[in-house]
Image (cartoon, rainbow, N blue to C red; front, side, top):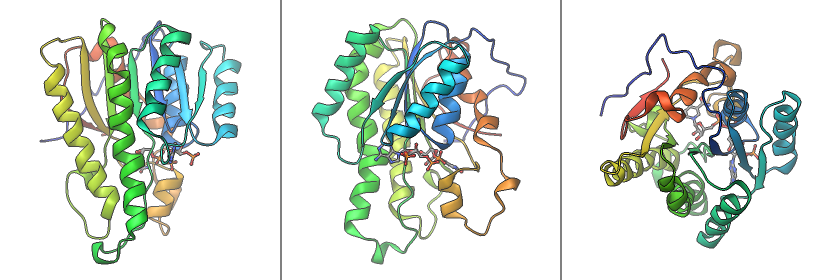
Length: 252
Ligand SMILES: NC(=O)c1ccc[n+]([C@@H]2O[C@H](COP(=O)([O-])OP(=O)(O)OC[C@H]3O[C@@H](n4cnc5c(N)ncnc54)[C@H](OP(=O)(O)O)[C@@H]3O)[C@@H](O)[C@H]2O)c1
């Protein structure tokens, strides 16, 4: 499936996401942090999910200091979380926030860059758990809430190696291919009801810890910052993309 771009002249209005409750995984650093701040600045109540509490608290403070809607903190290590943990999370969101209009599956780990024949078994399982299985369990637990909303959006995070297999990218690449599949299957299942849409976004090259680990010789200053790539997230999570379902988007 060809990757698409959002309209080149798109500009999010300041109140675009007012009243929307949106959960972001991996919200403490990199792209997830920038996206969480951008969503909050456009009126969303953001549920900040991640594994490092002090990073989540720092994002929380930045959102509150900017006089945006008060976010919620949800520390959870996706590597060790069980299906019940996701059900508990959905119940807490319902009890404390009353509903949910968006989920951004952003958390991810790179794993090792090594030939498949040498790929460590435990690392394979962990990458699949964090990048793929957690997104399935979280989506399944949140579906009843998302389907109750009149306009809700789920966004999976993709990568170039999720479209074209590349040597040594191992579990990371396979998890991204599978995330595209998960997105497409779910999008087809919810198409008829028309209130929930499911898409993916490939951010391309972004100046984060993950990118630096994958390309240590690269000059980070040649890359866009996470803050520079947040507009497609606003578009795909807000009402302006209503009706767009099952599509793979990329930055550009
Ligand atoms: N950067 C790029 O060039 C690029 C390109 C294509 C796709 N992507 C995708 O974009 C997404 C974000 O990547 P990034 O570049 O922003 O990476 P990053 O800076 O390494 O951030 C990853 C985030 O995921 C969180 N995370 C990792 N393992 C977790 C776990 N077990 N439980 C909960 N949270 C966990 C991290 O938390 P901690 O901070 O606590 O470790 C961090 O907040 C990923 O899905 C990645 O595959 C990135």
